[in-house]
Length: 114
Image 1 (cartoon, rainbow, N blue to C red):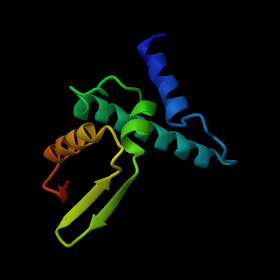
Image 2 (tube, one colour; image 1 turned 60 degrees about the vertical axis):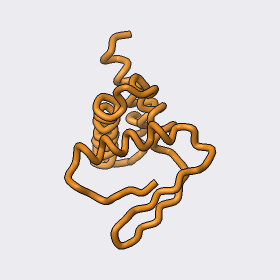
Image 3 (cartoon, one colour; image 1 turned 30 degrees about the horizontal axis):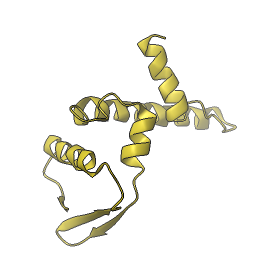
Image 4 (spheres, helix red, strand yellow; image 1 turned 120 degrees about the vertical axis):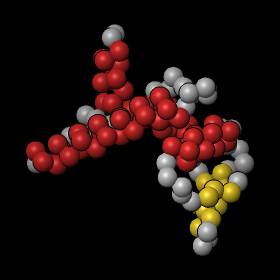
């Protein structure tokens, strides 16, 4: 398969790009737009934030499963955001590496205390 075919398959299978269950054209078109936006976000995460990690060449489904769908507790105070991840979560290092790189790319934002 070519690289373009792999990306199309990734969007359809991992990001639900083929789920067009609405009865209206506009509803289905909006679902395709959201799926395309999710795919662009995954590509950006993979290319910019995951370089040098074990997930640098991961598919969108793997990134979603191992990095985004994580159980945790978020507590917000006046000045800080506290994030408590499950003690059995084995990818804390990659998670916080991605977070730090994301903060470095953006404007000054909330402070995360480990």
